[in-house]
Image (cartoon, rainbow, N blue to C red; front, side):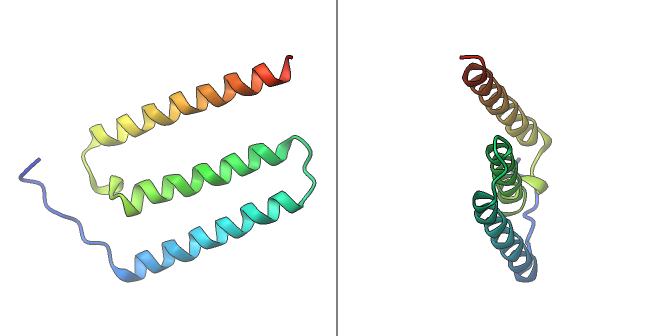
Length: 94
């Protein structure tokens, strides 16, 4: 790990990611104003997951790190998705 080189991301890339995250945030706010019945929560979670993936990949440099870190993050997301699914199933069948 000490022999790995540091990856430098340009300010232009950070600016584009900032604009993308702001657009996704605007879409998240707009979705709450639209009546999508039970799909509102699913769309909001999908947008939040997309934004968190972008932050993990670019701002936390996960895209450029070793593969084991990506595997660990993927495992955490799978556990989180399982908890969300179990919660929704519990709510749906009460």
